[in-house]
Amino acid sequence: MGVNKARLTAGFIVAGVLMVFFGTVLVFVGPIIIDDQVEKNTMIDPKNDMSYTMWKDLPVPFFMSVYFFNVLNPEEVLKGEKPMVEQRGPYVYRKRCQKENITFHPNYTVSYREYRTYYFEPSMSVGNESDLVTVPNMLVLSAAVMMENLPYALRLLISATFKTFKEGPFLTKTVGELMWGYDSKLVDFLNQYLPGMLPSSGKFGLFAEFNNSNTGLFTINTGKDDIRKVHRVDSWNGLTQLSYWRTPQCNMINGTAGQMWPPFMTKESTLPFYSPDACRSLELVYQRTGEMLGIPLYRFVAPRTMFANGSQYEPNQGFCPCRQSGLLNVSSCRHNSPVFISHPHFFNADPVLQDYVLGLNPTEEEHGLFIDIHPLTGVPLNVSIRLQLNLYIKSVSGITETGKISEVVMPLLWFEESGYIDGPVLNTFRTNLVVLPTVMEYMQYLLIALGLVTVVVASVVHHKVKRSSNPVEVFSVTENPGVRKPARPDPNPNESIQISNVLILIKKHFCRKKYDLLQNQGFLGPDWTRNF
Image (cartoon, rainbow, N blue to C red; front, side, top):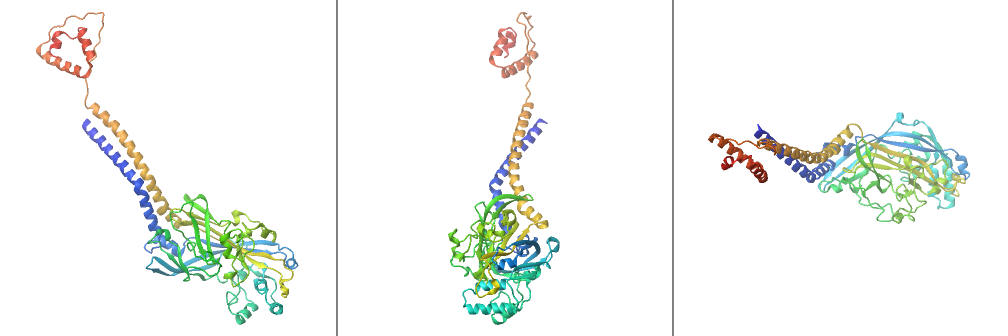
């Protein structure tokens, strides 16, 4: 039975050593396996159902929330007073994005057009699309600025045209009309006699060209040849650089299409992306770490330099002519209309912009944009892109509709495009790209710890089993020094053999001094020691 226990403990020792060995191997091989799985699950490949479906159809809920700035004192504004605005909304639209005309190319790129459709969500909105809002009339006030340098007589003619079509400096329309377009005889007139002056040939609306439209022909990298290039834009509408701006750097098309980024991010990484709506490339920077439903994330935000003017940030000189810092002049890609983009309520902008308009209250929590990224995979977990549309207005002589309007950058509306991973998509993502790699990471250390414990415990048990399988008989001899022992008779031959065996054991298991002590004190007579 002792031999079986010894073999069993030896087996446990071998098993423990193997666990330590495999755990140590996983410490070095595990990260390679995880990285390999991440690469396979993040490259754009139709064979990978999960990542390809997420990229192709964006199955997560995505919304656009629109806030209008209702002008409370239009008559006073015409007299030169500060505009006073009241924020109305949000008016929430569900956004559906779907990529079509997907074509893979031999150079590891893929082309597509992404179509977007908006559906009004009354249950999520504060108000309805039938709500009335008073805003500056872009047709009149933007045209006035655009034609400021024309001959005075021509400006008088333009003013007379506005009066003929009953177009004033401010208009009151429903939210639905302002968003998706309204009928205007002036628009029909301009489209007939000055084709191409307006962005659309139908109704005029702030988002008329967004609904049921596409963002252009994107060609991006699939990441099959180099995972660091996955989702990076190769060209847009066949262009590798733009022509809107004044410097090559500002005309560069950088980063991704703004939906996903390459994996293996660090805190030094940035999020560059090209936005057709902003007519330029943008870049977000790391702010902090966080967590969403147990999934680690990095939060990236807009730097203060994003919309800084050229005098404060030299690389932005190419986006000029500039006004106050915090404004992006997009007139060059918006038919020369004096339109500016900023953060909502002029957040992170020159404070003077807020002073010119009453009713603004910028805060980072409500008006700062951010993207939360899972750093290992580059997949956005939570997105909130917030931008404001502004119109530069002023009094123009000869165009009486402008009255005595003070020179001001007037906010029209701001919108937030937001989305987050949820439901089955979140569960699948967490299982494949978070839970399994985490389990593998902890398993390597668990194997090492369990193996070490097994080796130590099995070694102790094995030692005890070995000792119990070789028993040693110990004889205890007590003696009173004051009492003389009587002489013992000589042992017979059989006894001599037994005694000899005992003496051999004593010699083996006791030190020499104790043996001599027993002999000198008379416990071992001449006949006893003769056989020793």
